[in-house]
Length: 227
Image (cartoon, rainbow, N blue to C red; front, side):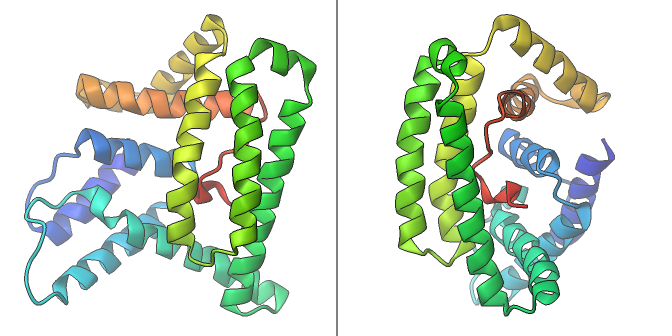
């Protein structure tokens, strides 16, 4: 509850007006929460977004929402990761980014192959098995592109991550899905009672997909989950 309230508080302070998180905002916030993004990182990203907005000659986007700051939040998250790892390894920021992305892609390829080689998983989840084979090829192609921009790379990885999550839930047993939903509701606590039905459904769905991937030892493909 405090995590989400903190996001609202920081954004309201900059916006100068009360804010009610939209379903999209809640979904983004839950994604950051499930990925373990620190509240300070989100605050710095929101600060950077409003500083960037203030420099524009003409105002734009009259209806500002939290999701607009996602790009700056992602930049702040990556900057913190790179600074920590790059300094300890004696690398420049650019070298650290390239190394981390290469390791991230290769590790995801290996985890997907491990899943595909499991005969029980292949028999129980045919749609997911076929998709993981396709995604492995996509990741290999992405790795060869040597894309250096985390933001652009995330734009290619996020849709694959979403479809992977959808299929793993679709082909999991009803008993498992119900257990994951119950755990998601427990994690949300009092926040669940305050959310609109649509936002609550989206939020629980996001947490269920995370639990499903963890259960089946499937990787998250979004850079938010890059170690």
